[in-house]
Length: 105
Image (cartoon, rainbow, N blue to C red; front, side, top):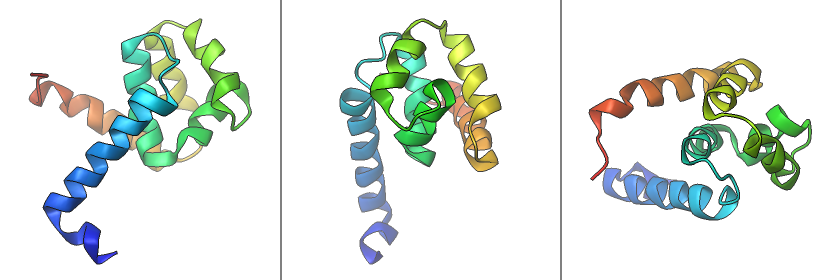
């Protein structure tokens, strides 16, 4: 636990986890915005809870085809209204509201 209390290490571990989520666990989500929304939510609550929003199952392989049929705004709306934990719904909103402050390189 003390490893993560070092800010530099914490950022590196968090960035590595985001990378794994986006490029490995959620790579089958075709729309980049939909994948971003699911990644941010999964970072806070895990992929199983994200999958349950769409497939009523903790299995992302069942959720991905459903996600891929939806426009990104509907994916976001589903996450914000149907994720089980209010903490995650609020986290997703906060992260996306601050996204404009950190433009991509």
